[in-house]
Length: 471
Image 1 (cartoon, rainbow, N blue to C red):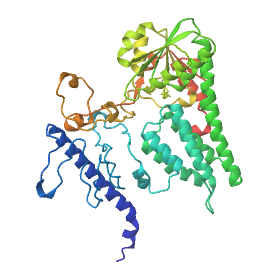
Image 2: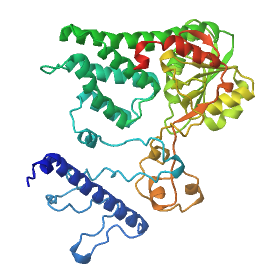
Image 3: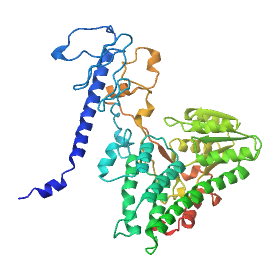
Image 4: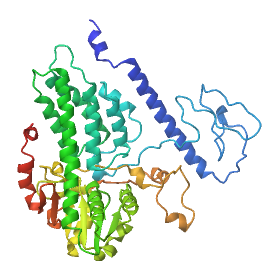
């Protein structure tokens, strides 16, 4: 009996070698982390401790010293003067860098939410077993590391990466562009989705692109079809995202931020809200902004820097100070990642608390959002379709494993990564979004105008009646 079918289904040798190398690297990092934890427990030992070790192994590295080189690595040459760390090998990380430790335990209650994919995405390309465009791989790395945040920024970045892919695409011999390109877009989109969930705005943009590709006339030449698709991508970014945001900003600046001495409270950072505040400042309105922020992303700091650069008086505070600051506000201006069909908001975690407290204090709440973020979904809670952030971002930065707190001052500091890893019963949860019920939303401002949350369903029928919404 021939072994040809079995050999055909067997993965390539280079892929198997890379997977084995990755497994060895993970074991090595776990071993180093374990040795580092043991070293911190014996931190009271003198740094010049010397002597033979058991079984011929090198002694544990002390503070300020380098560990013994790995097997097969060239030994460092001893010279006079201060010693320099050896150059890193292709397999071993530089000795001066802290090895990436395992992620903390995931809380079982949030086991159904999407977990972020941090670190290098080399295994992402091999798992898809296909060629991913360099622009898509670069964007996937940025999305996984949260270098690009915000619904508008992510949608524009995704369309830009897919635009590069379309520009470099060539129709194979005997294939039809409208069919073959849709199929070849699928692995590119899958790579982005594996790096981070797409979200309502990105899903809408991708659905639009796939429809425009599918309806490309067969009789068109390849260059004409490609130019048409690239043009539709540019028009979507211009009309549905950029121009729509300018329209919303002008409307809010003219109708809502016009009273003398207005105090606007906002949460996090929304590009549309930021544009509205800058437009109001340009028109001469005199107002103050309270920027409420939350960890771990702290997006409000970018908004704060922009407003201060334009001489807008600001107050910055974390979410825990919201009850004290809300009585000062005369208007709450919020952004959102999506507006659901029932008028609820799917926005950055903390938005629901801001809207609820504003409704309690009878402060008007206005949401700035383009219609392309309107979603036909309905969510009753934030657990069914949420996204988990990087749990290590909530922990202390630059935290190599350290010993347990030895003083009262240490006990009030933030948890470190090492403390979480030392406690198997401790989990870390970091949800990125929450759902704000529509009864806490006063108005939704879109390019269609100012309307109540109950009108979202009607706007969905008007602005999402395009054929690509039914594909």
